[in-house]
Length: 103
Picture 1 (cartoon, rainbow, N blue to C red):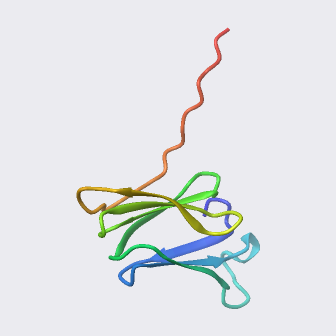
Picture 2 (cartoon, rainbow, N blue to C red):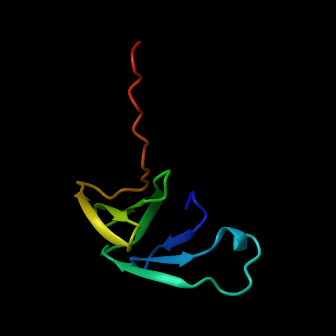
């Protein structure tokens, strides 16, 4: 995650796994990172994952023709599912540009 607090992995088993990795242990962990969430929502392999810039959301795309939006705080949960006509190979969260004030 952009804030350095979490690592998320997914793949052929359809499951997203979330590990907590404090910023001081990113490059030299003192032991295994704790798995804090196992997320079951997709029914086919997960092809892509992307965090929002503020680390509050995660998006996952799957061969099951869905894109899921996950809220990361206070608990990991799916807050929206988008169904597509074809499977998604990649996904990302784009930051909404703030409107410039005139004047």
